[in-house]
Length: 222
Image (cartoon, rainbow, N blue to C red; front, side):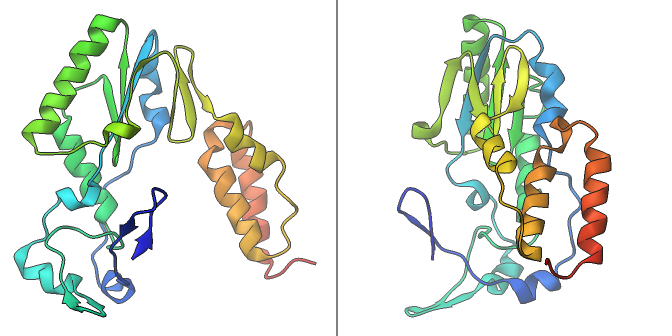
């Protein structure tokens, strides 16, 4: 059981051995920058958060035994996709893209949906369209995490408003004030932080090339 931020627990298993034998799915996960042009001229924004995520995807009956986990109470198998399986994210992203197909005002990243609008009337119309589509597919939402009809909101580590998107200040501060790495693990973690906001960093390709080359040449820090 993996603890969640809301003090609940998420059942999962160690699928390392299974994942090594799984054929990888190359379906791309989107980036908010891919949707940036759709935000031009928009005044109001809404965010919908889904509650079940991978549990919306049924496991093929023949593959159910492969999901088995051993517990103190016996052996359990998942009828719906559990967390920890390779390609689970790609499968769910493909599913959600199909669910919201044709809605150019909506951007979906796994269990997060961003809706951009030009007016209150448009906001209400688009929200109804999205909620109706989700209902048709039996997809549940987490009402407590939804944000509706605001001029600015946070989404995937970015602030979204009528001027576009920019990194959230509280996300940038840890990068700027990051202590000098003392181990390879610390250094690679810093590279990961830089990589997420690479599109907002001037000359990021050059900076990352230098750091990546250094990472490959060094096995320790002095």
